[in-house]
Amino acid sequence: MSSLDILSWNVAIETEVLYGHHVEALQLFTSMQHQGFLPSKIVYNSLFAVTQYQMLKIGMSIHAAMHGISLDMDIPIQTSLIVMYGNCGKVELARRVFDNASKHDVISWTAMMVVYGQNGKYEDVLTLFHRMPREGLMPDSRAFVSVVDACVSMEALSEGMKLHFLIISSGVDMNLILITALINMYGKCGSLKDAHRVFLYTKGSNLASWNAIISSNAYNKSSDTIQLFERTLIEGVLPDKITFVSIFDACSNKNLGAVGKQMHARIVGNRSEKDMVVQTSLIDFYGSCGHFPHACKIFSAMRDHDYVSLISIVSACANCAAFVEGKQMHSYVICNKFERNVVLGTALINLYSKCGSIYDAHDVFIRLRDPNIISWNAIIGAYCQNGFGKETLSLYQSMRSNRVKPDAITFLSVLPACSHAGMLIEGCSFSLAMKQDYGIILDIDHYNCMIDLLGRTGRLVEAQQLILNMRVEPCVASWATLLSACRKEVNVSGVEQAAFRIMQMDPKDATPYIMLANTYSAANRMNDAQRIMMKMRAKDITAEPDKVLCSNMSPKAMIGIDSMHISRESSDAAMNMFIRSMNV
Image: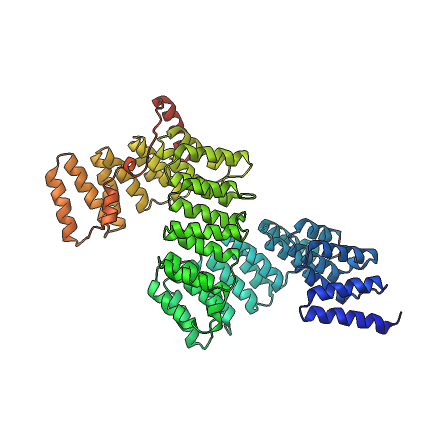
């Protein structure tokens, strides 16, 4: 066996990998072993890059071959093994390789952090990162990028800011990749000012950093997104598909249909127009703006359809309540064997929910292979939005029976279901469970649900106490919920209090004026009613027909209620316990 023969085999395999001929590379590797030749370390590293395109079984067989000759104790080889198992989604096997290593370097440590991040285990990324100093390893820029990215996924702004300070104090190389990661972290964690501050200190901004700041602005629905895009052109930076995806997202968020169409016109005829990611973002844009025919046209023009593009067109159908077209897309999904995909199934549930076809939504749900919290929330929300209060709570119990832990979004359906059904005791119990059993902190939307529940069950005094003393600042919706409840009971003082607060917070909203005037009329205070309407006209406030219609409907008229009769003593006890838990 000559060294030239071994070299020839190694070169042949590396060449196949280099040119992307992965199947051929693996075939050569197998033939090489059969003829008694041992691949080099470099070849093994190359082959692990191939296995992400092949089956896990192949990668494991390569690992076994290496173990037999003790090559798997080499740090670069171990790093490749960690990456290979991570790419195959086998985090436990990657961690086993990591733990069995006799020693580590920064690269292998970072590889394990990246694997955790790729597979959604962001807490483990942070835990592993904080262990590095104890192991005598100093993080480099790549390690910092991986942990900053984990903070983005967790929306952990406080942790991200600590990392930024650590990056500066450690003297690590602040390259553009790390700076871009920091811009992205601040933007996605809601601190747009800090994102801009990092961007402004960037020397030699490139397309990646421009994309990060544009994406951050689009994510935060900033009106500056389009202006930033124009600045990139002035600076001589040519936008790419990532830039346009952010721009179309911004136009969707701001409902800037005309601007979005202009941006679409800019890419007509170039490569970006035919890119699947850009086409998918265009479907999202046109669907959110109500231009359903445009969304369908782009979908039809796509060469291939993956599940992401199918999610976009199904969501476009949902936004436009296009039931017939949605049914057609559902058939297409079934024909292409995507029906059991959880994310796509969740989009179909939302479609049927918005179209009022709850039975179709349920049929999709029961066919999902392994429903997660998002799909459970979708079906629970579908029943709630379509007025099935008891069924909503029944599904919630089924979710718990299936050992799926509810989150904050779950209770945004459960609490309204209690409200619609007049179930005060249950609503208060669920609110307590959020904090005590699941560690969920109530936000403004949860508080608004409880204000609505108290109002619908005639507990106006308690609703007023809650809105004045809750831990978050009341918003317009909070006062509007109280306003509706007080108007139904012709509680003049309550209507006055809520209406005046809304007038202060949203001076151009006609609803508080109209509802206050109607309440005065119902209380035979015609002079006061006339005075309020004259005040509204003097301020040139115009009523929006849809808004006024809703404001004059009672909650019972908007959704069917199957109120339950409960004893005053029981409901008082539950309500008092809830209020005490809120520190009211």
